[in-house]
Length: 489
Ligand SMILES: *[C@@H]1O[C@H](CO)[C@@H](O)[C@H](O)[C@H]1NC(C)=O
Ligand SMILES: *[C@@H]1O[C@H](CO)[C@@H](O)[C@H](O)[C@H]1NC(C)=O
Ligand SMILES: *[C@@H]1O[C@H](CO)[C@@H](O)[C@H](O)[C@H]1NC(C)=O
Ligand SMILES: *[C@@H]1O[C@H](CO)[C@@H](O)[C@H](O)[C@H]1NC(C)=O
Ligand SMILES: *[C@@H]1O[C@H](CO)[C@@H](O)[C@H](O)[C@H]1NC(C)=O
Ligand SMILES: *[C@@H]1O[C@H](CO)[C@@H](O)[C@H](O)[C@H]1NC(C)=O
Ligand SMILES: *[C@@H]1O[C@H](CO)[C@@H](O)[C@H](O)[C@H]1NC(C)=O
Image 1 (cartoon, helix red, strand yellow):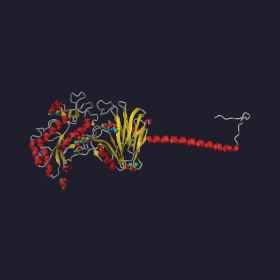
Image 2 (cartoon, protein in one colour):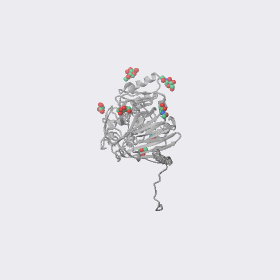
Image 3 (cartoon, rainbow, N blue to C red):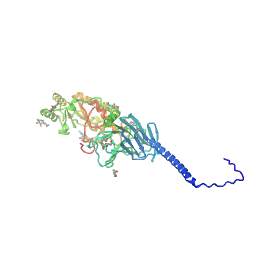
Image 4 (tube, rainbow, N blue to C red):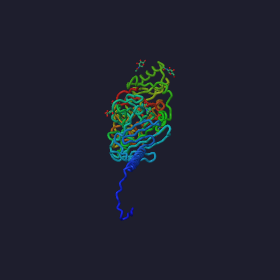
């Protein structure tokens, strides 16, 4: 601004009177205070926005994990990112989806999606972590905290709730290799939280009991899981965590959402009365006379019975569908007698066809077996009764052929049902090809149970994976669990 000053007046620097100094000090202080208030407000609102950006409903995301609060605002679920940390600057929130695009290792696709079922009772969060590096491993650590946990796999020593000791590096979560024959990637806690690992994950489970934590790992490297056909070996870890107001509502919700129910009910007698097995008394050393003696004794001592199960070694070769004529010289007469005495009979069955069974040739001709990788020859596998081919139940023709043979046995002798032994992924060879690709080897067990479901009335199975809607009894096995005998506590 232009200031007019008369020529004769030379401006003198006016001295500030002494009494005005405190006033200026106060003004400066005031300005300073205003500035610092504005600055701190800016910081506060930025961090608030950031905190808000990293929060979705009651889930709070940090670079190295997340926590979830329950309706009472208590922390009930903690997960740590073990294999990498998020770059929080790459995170953004759009509606119910909180996503990040970078980790310390490079680009990734990460998101948490809120799926509100019923805000008052159940809140769910879908979490997915995907990397674009071949053969990498993604690991998240879930803390048990002080809750009791249920679910997972059948173990050698079965505790309820889960009680694990020591340290275990992540093992393939597949039937019969390290874990037992019955498993589900679902856990439920006494704090009314539940987690279901998505079926698409090449899932490995480990733990450290000192840390009170499970390791959830996704990887294709050194694993029986294979990427889906035509897909690169980029592992992806995805799961759904749900938090409820109480254990019952959360479990009910998870069961409704993820598990189908059986549609039929097995025979009532199997619930009420004992199943008698030749294995208990004679092991594999059975014949017609022994069997009839056995049922005579059961009657003589007036024991109740649901049915009698004819176990291992009734056929000449493993893979045959008939009785060894030497051991069972008159099978029709034997079945007639058993029927008169009111015994229903089930027969031991397995998915192997040994090379000296006549069905071995039939299976090769019709392409019924699991094959070696080239897909030409059957892959030979060793099982506890020798060497044979493994029936490929991902092939509808195999399923039909096998079921037809079982149905014929049923009509011929009046057999009620079967005890379906084995079926674990541990009997699949390391390298193989099947009719439908088995990127998740557990699907082999699942297909086996689907084949058996038709005989549900008195059937027994020893493997289960996503088999909640299979209407059969499942039995606990010692050989289905790789390390020795089982005990349930
Ligand atoms: C979680 O469950 C444990 C054991 O049931 C209990 O002691 C603890 O208080 C629970 N925590 C919360 C936050 O509810
Ligand atoms: C879960 O797996 C299915 C395939 O089994 C896939 O289509 C889906 O995208 C997966 N969900 C998440 C959240 O990754
Ligand atoms: C298990 O966790 C404890 C406590 O954090 C730790 O000291 C120990 O090294 C862990 N064990 C292994 C084998 O990583
Ligand atoms: C069957 O029972 C009879 C009479 O109890 C007995 O003499 C015979 O040795 C038994 N046979 C077998 C194979 O156990
Ligand atoms: C057989 O079952 C009935 C009930 O149906 C029971 O009363 C009886 O005690 C049982 N007999 C034996 C020997 O267990
Ligand atoms: C069939 O093969 C098995 C070995 O897998 C052998 O132990 C058995 O003796 C053979 N049976 C006959 C009748 O040759
Ligand atoms: C069980 O449920 C699955 C869907 O998860 C379905 O594909 C299958 O056909 C059902 N099996 C039986 C025996 O009901």
